[in-house]
Length: 318
Image (cartoon, rainbow, N blue to C red; front, side, top):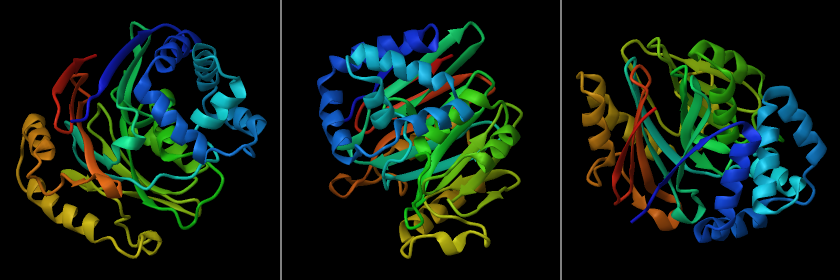
């Protein structure tokens, strides 16, 4: 059974980073994960370059990283190399989302050995907050902000890997700095992408889209009533960048097509996603393709439902 800790913090970015860093320092689960992070992080990462790129796109994360470093009693440069999500190898995970103008439902598939298992809420003032499932502490696998903008990542391919941000750092930057889907699309065009990812998006206005991104080119995919997102590009302009074997993604798209044909409430879709018998639920954990969580975001209601694989469902009202 996989568990998810919901951590609720209030304050400025440094104070939240400090409190979370102290908690991480005392977490046996996280310390085991950190040992693996150190294995794939490189001493050759340029921390000044990381500072510069974060200053350009999301300077508040530098303050959070300073707090994390102090809370964990590590150097700021170590925090930048391990947790900033820049110039690191891309992790090849699976993800499935179904989105309408009313809600966003998603499964995240990977290995429990490389999983934060933490849903973070950060409240910076009464009317400004973000929440989401964390990856490598600062990044977000999926998340929503106080404007109702919701974003999640879907790994596609690593063949054209370049120096840039991991998908989880990009999701975090989006929910930190954007208000709407259109805001997010414009920023996604500017950010340096390390690998090929889909970014699935919905906002409180009911707009939704998939941003298809590679280090070489980008494109936007839209549908009218609902949209499904998996681990492959769907537009003709981007399909040539897919991995050779996309059979799992094709199978999931076919299964999701049935959802598109009927209007179903978020809770019903969430339960279908989180059911081990569902065609979008996977159990191949040894090969890094097992469902770790199901999450639903309802932007107009500011509500979240998150279910860990084999564990409990937690309901969050922001």
